[in-house]
Structure formats: C-alpha cells, structure tokens
Image 1 (spheres, rainbow, N blue to C red):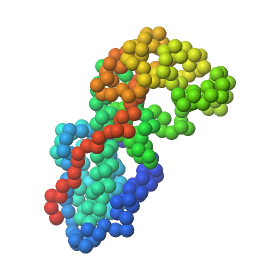
Image 2: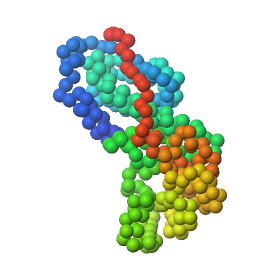
Image 3: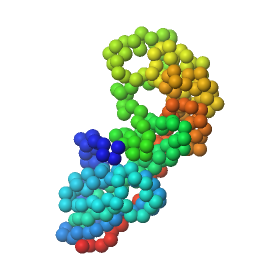
Image 4: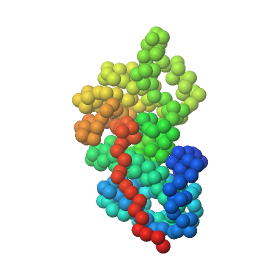
Length: 287
C-alpha cells in the first residue's frame, strides 16, 4: 500500500491547479521580504495524534516549485504518530514558504481522512467487516481522498460511474415512473457488454432483497436500515450474496452494524465531512 503506484498525471494536474490558486501571479510577501539566496530548515509538526497521509504529494509539490528542496521524513505514508515533528525540509526559503500552505492543505485533509478511516476500521476489526468509502468526495480530489482511505485501512467503492453499476433509489423512482418493473433484460445486456462489471442494487426494505438477488445483483446495498433489520437480512442471506450496510452510520454505531455479520459497511463521512488534522510547518532557522 505504502509503495503503490499513484496516477501522477492526474495528481500533477491537481497540484498545478492548487499552486496556481494559492500563488497566482506571484508571492508578494516572499519576493519583497525574503532574499532569494536564503536557505532554511523547517519541520513538519502534527499538533495531535493522527495517521499521516500525503507525504508523496508534499514531495511532489516541493519538487514542482524547486527540485533543490529536500524532504527528510521520520515516518512512512500511512504511519500513526502521537504528535510532534514527523519530517524535516531544507532548501531555498522563498520556495518552501510558497509551498507551505498548499502542502499543508493536502497533508492535513488527507491525514484527517486516513485517521478517521483507521478509527472505523479499528471498531469493526474483531468482526471481519470491511469499511468502504463512497463517491461523496471533494470535487477533483477523489483520487487523493480515496488514496487516503486506503492508507487508513479502508477499501474503495467505484472511482467513478463507469466502474460499477449501482441501482439506487433515484434510479428506481425513474423506472417506476416509466412503469418499468422488469430490469432483467437490461441487466442481461449489461452483463453481455461488460461481463466483469459488478452490479449492486440498493434496497431499503428487507422484503426487496430476494427480488434483487433474482435480478442478478452481485451485492445488495442495505440502505438506511436499522441494525436489527440488517441482522435479520444477514441471517437469511449470509454467504449467498455480498451484503453492504450504508446510510449515516457513525463511529458510535458502526460496531453495532458490524456485529450483524454484514460483509461491509460504506461510510460517506470518511470523505464528505472529515475534520482536517491540525498540522504546521515550523521554521528552525536559516542555514
């Protein structure tokens, strides 16, 4: 995981936009107040316990601004820290200061996602349940946020709509409005054209599970069901089809759902409402 190959073409585009957003036509403060020949040392500091995520992104940002900047990390991406310094950076002062906020913005948010994911994963660990993310990500940052989920020990749902079929309540509403009750033909055509594509069907009532299975679903999304209803579905369908619980399941509830025996739990909060970790870059001095 820590050495996985990242899609750098896409990430470089994200970084370029982020740097442009922050620096614009130039950093007036450093240009007018910091001599261009000054070299500094600074350390990355976590103000709270966390799982660090985003170190390769920080390295890439620094490299884009000035290849002379060197990072020295005391941890690997995905490691847990209790707080305090976890890395050192040395190089031209102007470019380090230009990079500071953009680098921290990525580092703090991705570490927040990895930390929250790890908390969910730890809660369900005794029950063999997998924690999945969703598509409720920050626009244009999905590839990075899902990377942070993996660093936290979680799993990724589809990256985009092209990777998986998931027939949700709004799809069903449209189909019902059109009077289309039999989806089997569409599912057969889909399987013929995309034989390796997973098909999920969302249900909100336990009595709809059997019809979803008969339609050819690979997994059933049990949406907004309380844990007792999920438990009853699991009793009937465990090991016959993959069962996934979803719908506002918080850290204080996830163990209750895990105890039902469900195969996996998807958590939108991993990315849509995560709190960034409090971190800073603190200058040690010029060298």
